[in-house]
Image (cartoon, rainbow, N blue to C red):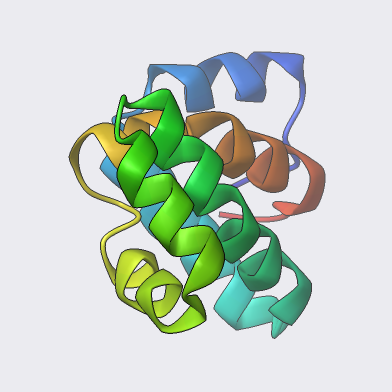
Length: 98
């Protein structure tokens, strides 16, 4: 990725949620950015609630290990769609070079 400009943000918006997830996690791994991974883990319960899975969200808040399981699926389906803003913000702020 080149430096992300407003046009680059529009390009990110056009990507599938799974691609955004993969790019954001790849960049976080490359940067060794544990902070982003923590932000993602903290965002999962709200994303679950946004997809209508309120019971799942309450469970996630109370059970940290389930968050790790959710983390492994954060790039799939409705969960990935609910987390799109997090992925786009991260990629927009930190992406340099393709």
